[in-house]
Image (cartoon, rainbow over all chains, first blue to last red; front, side):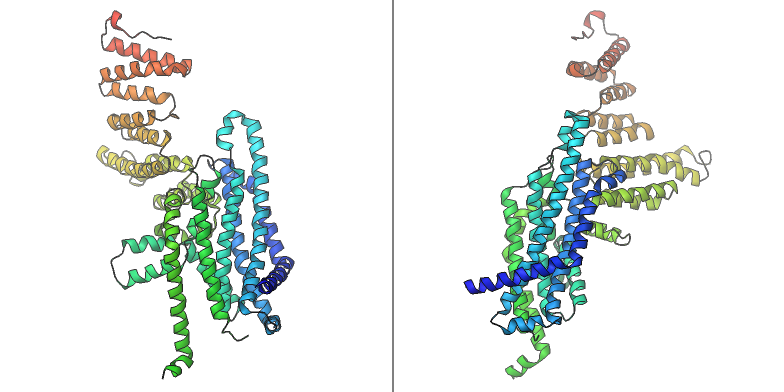
Length: 277
Length: 267
């Protein structure tokens, strides 16, 4: 057991180093940080949203959008690098179980995403703090009511987003386990991401449908994909005026994500163990 | 026979798909209690596009925005596009754009109020002009256009009230459309009264409500309302206090109230 964990740790560390060295990661991180920094500039296009709300919306948008791209692209790229360069073959010929290989890849990639999410949250907090200080000094107590934010909850939201990226990474791994090419994995994973984002619509649709094969199909879609709208709790967590989210709800969201991560990794292993490399 | 089926690649693939689907459905059942519990707390508070919204936005390249955040900036850019549509007096596209903007980001009151104003005040003018001008249409035709457009504006504002139930600005806007566009003092009064109940109601709402009652000939009601409201204006501006008092005195004259029975200001 300890030896297995040790092997997973080594694969994860190697995956992480490989991922960090990729130009794609650095470029995406820089773009995201730049975008959050430029939120104040984009605010010139704003028509009536509170400035801080606007920056939060922008920051959360950047975290989700670029994080999702990174979760899919890095996972797929690192997996197919190993397969194409035949290093997976060498690795798996040693006493490394295929499940350890998959878990190691997953953990290494998710560690990279954790850093990505943390850096972006830190930048967002810095920008918000800076703008809030300016607003408070400009408007004094008048601005206080609108401007106060739960800074600590930005990191909780970032954590919730990271759980979402774990689910995205896990289903990308599942697709990698049977896909033949990198491009196929990338495109399919993006489609799955869109389906997960809009899964709640399937919920609404089948509730209004008559019993029949179409309803069964829609119901099947809503059952087989996780509901990613559950992770969109930024406003509730961070803005003072919004109704707050209970700790129990946050734990439930994390639990919900974990169930899907475990299932997807198990399915990925089930496919990968029979795959010829 | 059985081993033959097992070695057949199609059977093997179908079996894999069935196993995967079955396991995912089991996972859904396992996670459903968690989802239901969180959805109750999250659903009412967050933005969610309906299937209609997704359809509306697909053609406009905004799906990425819906899926990936950036709602505020995309709604703002869509509003800029809406302004162009408004300048071109394209009322069909205007309605679609209003729906898009308010759905993308329902949080700013600005969108609801200004969209309703465009629909209630500007669109009737375009329609009348396109039909030959003010002199070419009868009063009945003109008021039919006004009523049709006003009802569309009310629909926008009532949708906005669902997102902003604690502000006076949206009910006040409905009242203003009834008052200025439809000249319906009774319904305007109803909405100004609704607006006056909110803490953020501007000072003039109280006076307009009383004035609308007066215009309907409900002098006693207007007088009662103002005399009841006056003591609560202790923290209002001097201007507001003196104006309300002036209105009370004018109503006393109109109602022929004896001097000894007249309202005594306490401050």
